[in-house]
Image 1: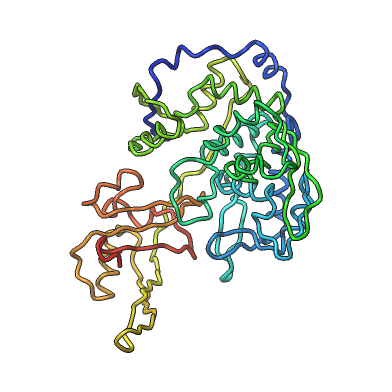
Image 2 (image 1 turned 60 degrees about the horizontal axis):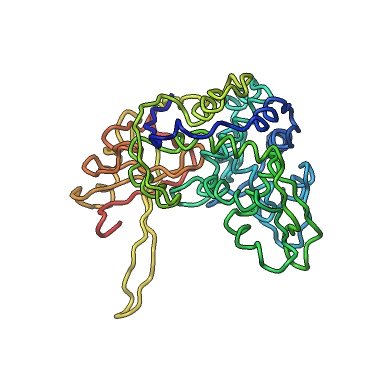
Length: 419
């Protein structure tokens, strides 16, 4: 269980109740692999594809290699047509959106295989997924989209807001009127803020109906019209009547709360309540407090990382600038290999790095890496104020560190000179 500190407006209990029409529609909605739309069907098509093929991904962003994209596109419920000579994963918004769900759910993880990065299905997480019913799969994917799925998985950034926040905020415009993209650039700003892969996910989750057309010469996916569907309207109404934002807020998220207030243009008058639930469980509790979806009983479970005993071997490299003349420098890389027992801490590893490169251990440090879901994590020197989130280097043993063979980790020493 994840310990969360959630904060919510003191008058949240005074919200208007969900409309009777919305309650009726939600209680009558059936769920299957392709109902209310094809999200579960296409998600499992992606899983099957990764099981059948050793799918290579790029070194830095871990994007699916272009050679697989056309085949994968053809297997989805809504294959699209594009006119790019060299398409990338983002050229196929449905693939891109499903990829983010696969990574954010930890069902698919990047692993090194003979010097190539491969996107593989984690068998333990998959077993948990397969035990879920259709309605449980749907809402676990929805919770994954709301709380986790973000392009930060592919970037060296740490998200401030989940992308769903922008989906939620752009919905008002769509709910007021169908959007037509044939009239110049009238609605392009809306689409740019939402992003194409989130529009594709709105379609896959059954929130919207899309009309697209053949691409223009040298262009990508061409959207003509977007219409909000009744199911999408009532799910958004349901979210507006609940405190789903509780799942966004962790124990040390004061900065996030300030940004949240700024983004929503609200003065957040907040109560504080301790909660021992995951974000998915919080969404489940919020929905079921309104007597909805009692069939949603189980959730996707991630196995606890196993401790790994033995000797860890790291290749540690440092770029240095060597003067060639008064105003010219060349950049060279020096490196060494460090073997260190797994029972030692990351602080011990830091000390070993500094000794290897002949540095004095007289400044602060941090390690930055990606966890199994692709999110950036940082572990800090014990004298910093940041380690409450992911831990301090004198507390974490190498045997318990969530890293895999082939992972790239950034070590920073001296926050002034930033070695």
